[in-house]
Image 1 (cartoon, protein in one colour):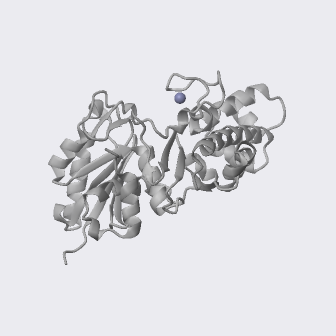
Image 2: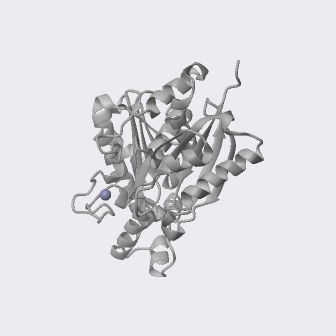
Image 3: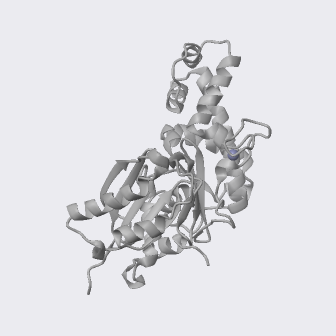
Length: 342
Ligand SMILES: [Zn+2]
């Protein structure tokens, strides 16, 4: 019997490109990363990805024959069939990029891609907090707020790829202006930048004693981590901010669950490093705003995989190129979720 082949997962981000070599069961065997070079309208990014993969296969004395294919998560709007990416502004890509065509030519491996939040959702669902259940929703709180929905065993893309974009759910009509042009999107309050925006606005209105207030007044740089750390230490103003963030997130999560009734809503991304403290705040509003059937059957959880969610989920896109007989039951379930419904 031929040796079971492996997967390559790529998580393309605005500052780093993460790579991993994984087994067909999604276990990471090697990983590395390179900085994302966004100069020259991002013209170096795809050649850098090809070079880095080929270089590491040489390094590990492996060849294209050892792999079933490559999966990649990317920012921007993805054309799943054509394998192209448009509107990835944080990569400086101003025109449509033929990612699939170029990477397949450069590595001699089959290639599939999807949106970065969707692949993180696939990763957490397969190997992390999602327990490989058929119905799992995922929210990632980073510079922005992204999301991915696995419903009845399949990742949901919608008609134009915007399925699962929970960051643009309106939580405050007429609220903060979002990068999407709308007002009051979840992203404007619950992203790292949103938390800082709230902190500045609340500090302006507040006259009491607070370390956060002093820092803002001094012009110190505030981060969402600082706000959450101060809140945990009992700072009044910081708690006002984190309570508000928890309310908005809880409202969005409850409404998503009221529609989809998943087993789990998994919360990940940099802001979720605030851990159980954040989860408790979100759960408080969730318990109020989810209706009884949902409240009794949907559970909120923190993500487990951290930075690896992206490469693991991305690698599951390449399961479609494997021989089905080589896949475990768990990998088969992951493969169904990651495939595009024709
Ligand atoms: Zn928006």
